[in-house]
Length: 152
Image (cartoon, rainbow, N blue to C red; front, side, top):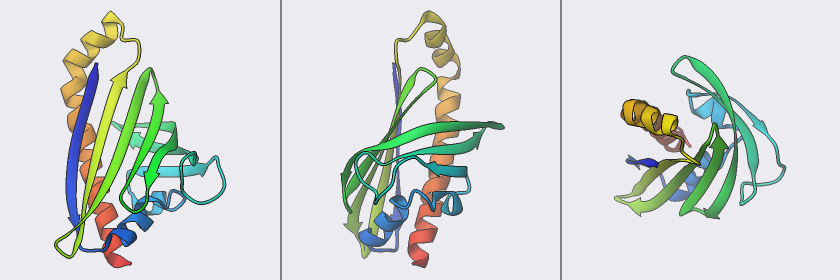
């Protein structure tokens, strides 16, 4: 059972400036209003294997998720993974130079691992609502990434 969405945002900044924002994990709580806090679990620059715990409040509930970089091709793309509550989450950022700035595309997917009958029913009933809320949060993240990159 796979649920995914993709959004794009044109940013009036060069790809290297956008990359600087999306790869600044320690500073992401200051950039993104949806993130309450970040706890780094690895040292060194952003790259494959970088790990952190990210705390967000969604639907009035605070949740902390361990995340890691699974792929990176600076400043063109990066993929971040997380496994939480029986689901495998993948977030991919793709940056393309366009119209004097950057087209930033964020693709998000959630795959239920070992779906049970109950989880299938829950996703059928609430999956669209959950993805709608997720899209809204991701669109806000993109707008805030754009604002930060454009201010650099």
